[in-house]
Amino acid sequence: MTRRGPFLLTVPMLALYLVVLCLPLAMTVVLSFQTYSHSAGMGEGFTVSNYLRVVTDEYYIEIFVRTLRISVITTVVCLLIGVPEAYIVSRMRSPWKSIFLIVLLAPLLISVVVRTFGWSVVLGPSGPFNQLLRAFDIPTLRLLYREPAVVIALVHVLLPFMIIPVWASLQKLDPMVESAGLSLGASKSTVLRRIVFPQIIPGILSGSLIVFGLAASSFAIPGLLGGRRVKTVATVVYDEYLTQLNWPLGAAIAFVLLATNLAIMLAYNAMLEREQRRSIG
Amino acid sequence: MRNGPLSLTFHLLLVVFLLAPLVVVIMVAFTPGMTLEIPLDSFSLRWLEAVFHHPDFVASFWTSLWLALASGTLSVLLAIPAALAIARSSFPGRDAINGLLLSPLLIPHLVLGVAILRLLTVIGETGSFFWLLLSHTVVVSPYALRLILAAISGMDESAEQAAYSLGASRWTVFRRITFPMILPGITGGWLLAFITSFDELTMSIFVTSPSTVTLPVRMYMYASETLDPMMAAVSALMILITGLAMILLDRVYGLDRVLVGER
Image 1 (cartoon, rainbow over the protein chains, first blue to last red):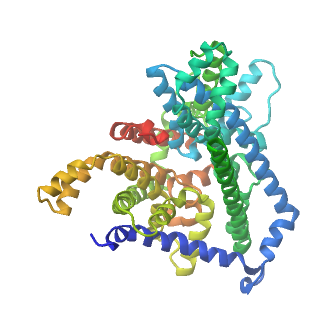
Image 2: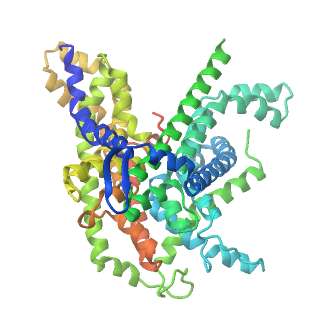
Image 3: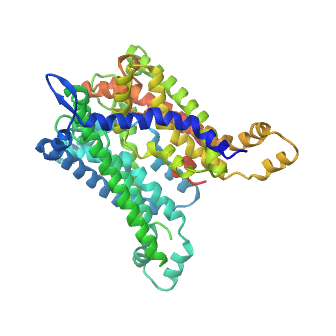
């Protein structure tokens, strides 16, 4: 085969990506620097005012701060639930282990709209959650269209993304090392803290990263469970595009989101490499 | 080490948390009433029937089905040659191309939707099913590529070498040996691409127009205006369809392998 042969095999897929991925992204970068006025619509002039507005206008700052807060809380909750759960399931015996792994991960394949709608039923004013509270004479909670509902649904939808990498790093553990620790007189908690935990840190980090990135850009959950009260970056971009029709501003907000996500990912990779160098050297 | 009672209680509570919204939705779908309530004494199929008489949901279901079938197939057709090149040979820029081809996994669908909407407006193709298909193919093909790449790199090459040494042509080796050996990866990749396309909301909500509204977009729009048992019935049917696809995926490739990514 000539040296070009293998490259040619990737050309059809590359061509599609150039037209439907790279070109649109480039066009949207240009768009985000265009002017816009409500009377004249989009102008051709070059301006950085859209980006300036995103970082100075209090309305947008509040939305970015809220999105950040929701994403951080979601990530922490996923971490606190997902890491122990992955560990518990990894210690189960043969049929249960794979059954519960599928129970944990299969919801991933069910539409986010369906799962979000499910939470709006469960958390609704007369839904099962409030009925349960009423049965115990606890005052009912108004959760819908408030931040807690958004966080609950985000945790539900994103938990598998925390469990998968943690599970993968648990699989690499040598159970003999745990047994060795125990037989040398270490307590269970010491074994967890000193032997298991340090080895699954890369899995925890990469899970947190994925959960954070997906939480920050999630659309259906804040859209359906946050209503008009809990606007996030994704729902605001949607508003700018489809109700305000200010596309340049919407594009600028979307790129600030993309840039934040990519920056966090690069910082994570740098951290991971440092970590690896330290453990080798 | 065994799990203690505390661990098992935590585990059970979490399983309840994970399954609660799905179980509740399926139960509400059978309510005879007009509100979102779990039926306790009487059941009815009226809402499930109503879905099939709702022209918008029916039209969107067919749009989503064709879209998922076509984008799954197209992404597999593009991913097979690309995966063969990337897994089997080294050429300048191979790693960069591999990175680019997997990059839609890292870009928020929101950004993809905004970007593709811009392209379609400029070229005057908003509302075209063909361009909706191409945009879905970009989003789902990394999933197909990943599974096919895994199948190729895990495959034993000696059978191919034997065939070559016996004089088989390149095409015969691919058709008679390579293709059958990586078929589970291809079917698994196709199914995963199908499911991802069938469920995709965030990009589609920007790219679809009234004539090409997909089912998730229709459901999102319906649920943001009215919350009635119709939504629960559609959701229950979606859970059923996804469940069937999952069973298929489990049979041909192994659900845990797809989900955890181990081979």
